[in-house]
Length: 287
Picture 1 (cartoon, rainbow, N blue to C red):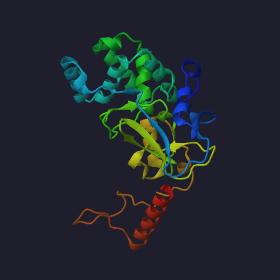
Picture 2 (tube, one colour; picture 1 turned 30 degrees about the vertical axis):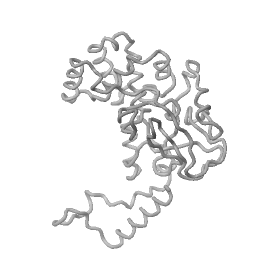
Picture 3 (cartoon, rainbow, N blue to C red; picture 1 turned 180 degrees about the horizontal axis):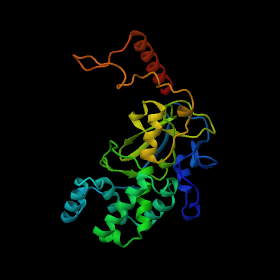
Picture 4 (cartoon, rainbow, N blue to C red; picture 1 turned 120 degrees about the vertical axis):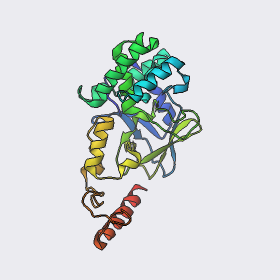
């Protein structure tokens, strides 16, 4: 999802073309620009298949001196190499692609100015302006926004031969709204495209959702919300976080005793039964 203040700067009509008769782009009063089902979507049905808009550069593509410089910066712990490679790609993107990145996604306006993501993006933009002539030719504000766009909207580590696992932004895919445990869609890399399919029946008018957390979704609601605030800059208000916390019966590693022999948690029989039933229910509802 993303806000709507820059709507006049870019044309979003291509997104509806990618979605066909299955869904459309809407402006939701609470969620901003997101996707809504137009008709019944059956479990397993394809919702979207999309090529990347912009892929972070590979370290191997950098000149040797720049590569050593960027690697040294990352090894110091002050910078993330992926963030530096994102700036390298953005600085060399075409004008239409840069325009979409800057005006078609949520960015620093969605986070407090002192949020760690914003602070890190500012530091990354400053570093790249000092060490990359292409980045130095761009306004610092554009580099900051691009860094934030990738932080809040990108997909990474996809199993395909196009992105090579590099951090990647997609024009339409970024508009899926988040839901922690029971999203109505899942995604995967497929022949260079990012593909989304329904995991359950989706009714007309329903907002399309994925989980931004991946395997890290299966934990208590407070931890999920903390993780999303840290990595995506928002406090989650999805139905899974506001409703009953079905992950609450999971044992706390700090509170439950461990076996001296194996190091595994020692669960009382009633807790073992409760945990088994909870996980079974969660998986059933998710699927």
